[in-house]
Image (cartoon, rainbow over all chains, first blue to last red):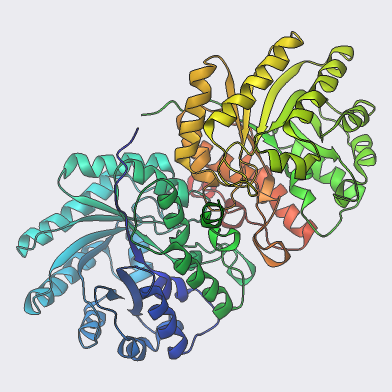
Length: 316
Length: 316
């Protein structure tokens, strides 16, 4: 009835993107403990910090300390996000897993607001990164297209623009002789519906049949989980998500902010449909609950509040 | 790429099921105003009250006063819920739209806990209702199967049990010479995944190809909206839902409770995918926001916090 993948890979964004919007600042120790407990759940990639201007994102001022303090578990990648060459160089000095990526934004306005660069300037910037990857023997993995489903400044982002950005990424990778694993489409501002997911993934696959597609989704308007499901139907097996749905909570001081899709809700849905994730759902739910205690307010995850269905099975 | 319906019918459950779990009691006037504002959005059926024991559900103690006070808008049905003959008789005395239904529960334990009757006793009770419908020239519409996807006491509810309950309903309707519109499957406790939706709807359609299928869903574990989407793909055009996701909010004192799927989030997803609902999304969002003000705490609806995408289009 569909092309469901057998196994789904979750890239955990909670400690990085998830934390950025929170008002309460965690200590280095709290962050490290949170990251370490996530690594115990079976997650294989955890985004831990970002190397951005601490004036714009105060929660990441201690990125260096956090990156240095994590006790690493073998087989888990601890990643960081950079938006410019300076950030990449900071990442390289730290005991982090630096994963090669190309990052472009499909909306000119969003690109300028988020990274202070036009699309053209961003493409130039990527050449610096690609040089650095080459010098440091870092393998390129994914090309990311931000605002691939719409932009809160420009509104609609046409599919042709997404394909154009994809082509830039493909050309850059070819220019540096680096094979790409695939393209990540990011619904940065939560515009996508399942129909958009199907159309855009279809368009990307039509153009590049051998690429894998990954999705970075936000549940801004209630379509986050249907979007995951629509993508699963198409065999997508790679999602960015955030434990407890951290990353913007539509409550209290976070009103209107856009939460990432919730990691443990995705794991729950996958497990219940016979799709493996390699993740211990109960352990991940415990991490989600610890995030609520850490930040001191309710978070939007669902299964963390209701509990999984495991107890109905073990008691039977 | 699917069998999307052209038009989706929403049965609004907010004022009835939505309110039941809330701790704060609204005044008759507040309830009536809430119901009247919902009727202005284009909703064509609004469940307003239930006729249940006020000791068990204190928020419905004023059901009679509420039902009498609503200023009715032509073309809108104002319904109530009863669980026994006494409740049905109360409904008949009031200016409500009494819609004929048969209601059974697929789980024996849940049936006893919720209605104090075994399945066998429930089937007997339905005969009283069917007699009353006949005496009052009330047309039978839907057969409801509660806990059709699982039960929080018994765990799994097999598909064979759901079909068995469906057959009881079909037999009862035939016994009273009343044609059925179709079967409503209720995920009363939020167990369903999209795969379950597809399998169970498939099984019901295989047995009764001419029946319509309706869904009553709860977003207990994050699968509410994917379940709606999976059903839309199969052409389901009838959903119970609750404005603002009222009906159990996983926050504060409502921790762990099971919210209904959110009306305006469904309307948003439908509209964005080109499916009509006849509902003014902005007006419904306004109702959702008024519900937050009424109850004094955040509610789980998403699009009510982020806003629709209309503003990006009108400004373009």
